[in-house]
Length: 279
Image (tube, rainbow, N blue to C red; front, side, top):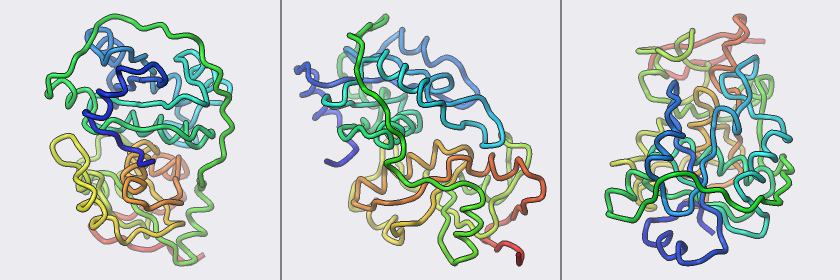
């Protein structure tokens, strides 16, 4: 089952009652996701708050470390997730919030999770129906068992690079180069990481067609590491990769914001990947 679903397919599912629809509208530094949901959402969708239910407070593991299993379990049961029911996730259109939840659910053992291409903006632009207010579903029974997807910590990234492994930084190209940094206190990238901006995989608020995605990601191999600012954009790039059959990519959850919590770790700037200094 490909992880990205289009509007027409989702519209067919709305006539059925055997799936769960979740709204994860989120933008970095903004807190209006829930208000936007109340003002209009896909019929039957339940809101999930990324900052409080899909992330823990910032710390040594970066700006958006994963929450505890108990916090995630409570959130998923609150919104009605069952292991046997398909889950469809969407956000405002960036795919970032939706991909975060897709990654977490599949890592926790749920096998039936998909993301709406184009999100809420695309749905509305197509004239599809919406509703307002809150949706309170029957409580779900899903019990997360994290560990189904490969992840790597900072020391693992260092070892991976020293052994000649590939690390791809999917942030915007200017942030990778160390320009226009307004989010993290240090600008640049992990030495040795190669730039692969998510923006090159998206057009008009949607992932580009599968053939184009496949061509742009053909160089990725199982075991390659994906990094970004705090692990969220990297999940979106992984979603795109799995849409074209590229699996077993490794997430660096802390990403650059976790890397720079230790000032002794080197940082590179400019368009070139650079390399780690000798151990």
